[in-house]
Length: 116
Image: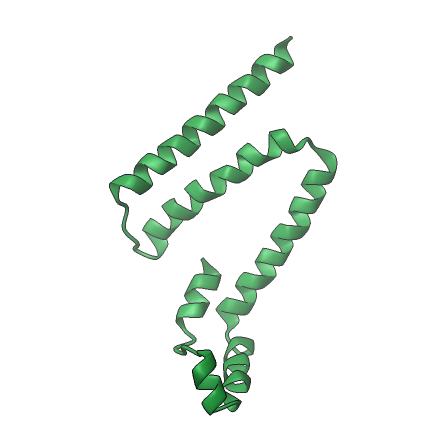
């Protein structure tokens, strides 16, 4: 969400045609990215997430972790509704219901397997 908020602050749309006409746009766009605190902090958190994922995948089974990772879509959607005032439509709600239902079914399967 920080990456989205930071990207919205860039106020620039750089295309290849624009860069061909004015090559300094690449430098100015890069400077805008480097000075954008929300964007940089968002990417730092993304890097931390990548490191934690590597540690989690090292110690656990992929079949147990990926259902939890699938819930990321649910959390991002719910937080974007609250924090970014985005809108929910019928198809998103159905998609979230399928994700939660699927993760629940996989969780039940894992619990049943552990009880044996």
